[in-house]
Each structure stands twice: as C-alpha cells, then as structure tokens.
Amino acid sequence: MSKSLNRPPASAAASARPDEHPGATPIRAARAQISVARGQIFRPINLERRARFARIEADATRGG
Image 1: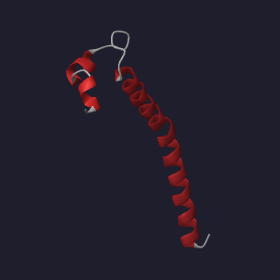
Image 2: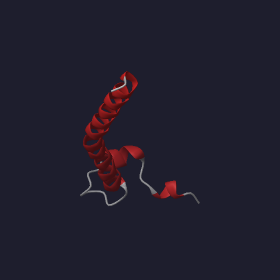
Image 3: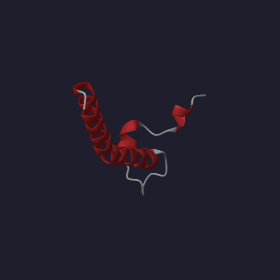
Image 4: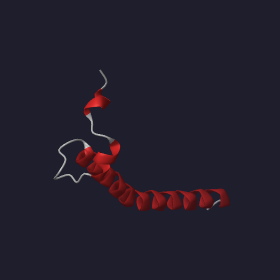
C-alpha cells in the first residue's frame, strides 16, 4: 500500500485551512514560508558577498 492513499485529494488539502485540517498541509505551508523567508534573508547577503568578491577580483586583475 502506498502512503498517498491516506492523504486527502490535493484540492481538499489546498483549500483546507490549518485549523480545519490536521494533516500535512499546515506543515507544508510552514515549510514554504520558511523557505521564502530564508530566501529573503540570505539573497541580499549572497549578492553583497558576490559583489565584494567581484571587486576583489577586479582589483587583483588590475594589479591593485
């Protein structure tokens, strides 16, 4: 038996709010929110780091 048979249909899971449905949907929603938040936090840091590295590389190639 596959585990997918125990889950509700996708349409029901998508429309159900976490307080109405005790299944995996609230966990999925929380994970999605966490990944979005991580992207918002780390993307500027990565861009800044990349820009700093590019400046260092440019200085090194110019002989600075």
